[in-house]
Amino acid sequence: MTGRISPIRIQVVDDHPVVRQGVSGLLAGQTDMKLVGEASNGLEAIQQFRKHRPDVSLMDLQMPEMNGMDAMISILGEFPDARIVVLTTYAGDAQVMRALKAGARAYLLKSTLHKELLDTIRAVHTGKRTVSPEISFQLAEHGTDESLTPGEIAVLNLIAAGNANKQIADQLSVTEETVKGRVKNILSKLGANDRTHAAMIGIKRGIIDF
Image (cartoon, rainbow, N blue to C red; front, side):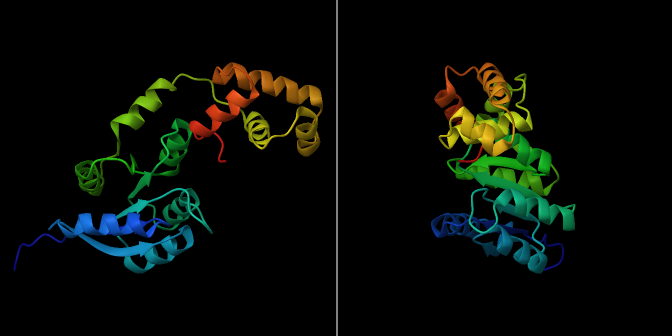
């Protein structure tokens, strides 16, 4: 039939089969969308992308072998026009910012309504960028916060792993006084009551992966 518009070709990347099946079932009911590839980790995602060249990729972040962030950076390095939607369970503002800076066109939570996912796919396909309302709130809430330095993030990671200041100093090859100074800055910047509270905030906001 002449004049027929080609469906949006979609790739779904997630290590949970039930999520891929759910997305597949959702797309099956859409006349303007077609699932062309599935992958269960970042390495598969890159291979599948090269093979199918999808219009839109739905990318989970936490996956074995290669995570979604690294896969996205690799795909965009090879295909700068790739349109990638991050679809995850994590709403941490720091992680959202990393994904958007890396080139994600949209950031959605897996708990999102089906209609929101479909609307986002269509919007991204036309060149728009979007984040869900919950994510927008997170970004706005911490938009003026002072960011942690790489050194402070390294300390926070080790705090979350249960290390004392002396152990942290040894692992980072810095003095214990340096560690104490960074801990003080971390508590101030995150508005944390103590080290444990700081670690919890760091994980919740996606500042550290744990």
